[in-house]
Image (cartoon, rainbow, N blue to C red; front, side):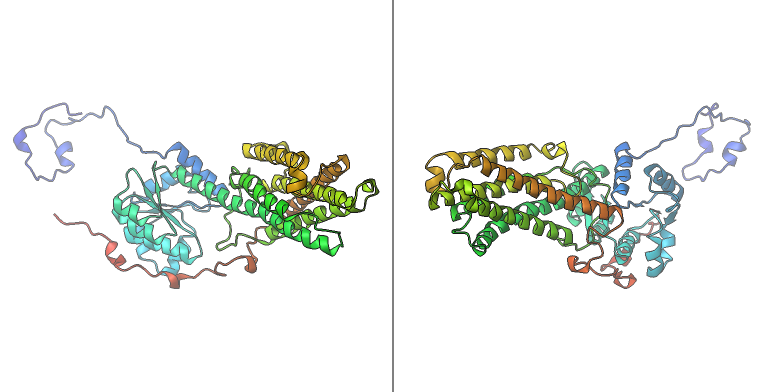
Length: 453
């Protein structure tokens, strides 16, 4: 606030005004401080929460900015990326003075990089990759494009981002919100888990269909426990209903509190393979076991050979499909127990598929003509349904016991996610090191110089 007026001719265009222009006025004290206005651009609240969630998921978040070092450190504190472990920021000129070996160590101990140039951004990305880290880079400007291209996952802004940044990226944020990236990480984990769950449901069912026929012949049953049309039907209905359930499962509780999977991890690991084997053996054993019981039990002596065979196939057919339901209910949760009401909650398709399969099984089992002429079986009596329910309980219980044992091993620190098992990982055994930090062509020209007037 200026109290007096000054002569217009006392100031000329181009004058370099110093402190004496204010302090050395003949009028004496002529400026009075009446207020101070500060402008602040704080982080979005959802961004702070997203970073906290990312840390819980084992995802490290770093910030590269052109701001002053102190400003960047203050923002880092607000975001929660500056703490006791990552306590300070490092500037672009300091990075320029470092060798590749020194930079590889600095990127592991700093989360905030201030006064960074476009070349600094590429070197930071390359250094992280040299230490075996999977990097994702966000940016919106033309000078961000080289680093976006160099990162494993370039993420450009959809609203404020330039066309160059979008073209250099693998993903574009439609809402320019960092929280969307964390949500994408969560959904990526859901897709990975659901792929494994689909395999866990469909593979044992398909295996047991063929193995039941083979094992039935090996135990000297008079005929196959299930017919070809029953196998085709089970293969179709289970894939469409039970397999579909696990394909659209929502995020499991705790999915964002586990570390990222190992680079190059195969879809089928040790414990998933073990669960598939267990499911296959259980289903096959229950199908053939029920057929053997029906074929040899004295309560069916009143039936002729064909009638006993039809009763055997009716029981084995229902054991196969209802046992598949048990596999599906257990497979809905990779680690969490399915002995809980949540086994029927969270995914309406789970209950819907159970209802559909149950109704269809009852129709095929009891509709005259359809059961005998098409599927080669007859109506099942109460004893047969006891065998079906008992098989369901056996399959479900054993698979849940295996899951409980695996949870206990994980709690004790065992490698239940194949992080150190080479056979189930296709990734590199060790980080490539600083020697891999090759800069793209033209990167040396990215240090833009200030133009002189």
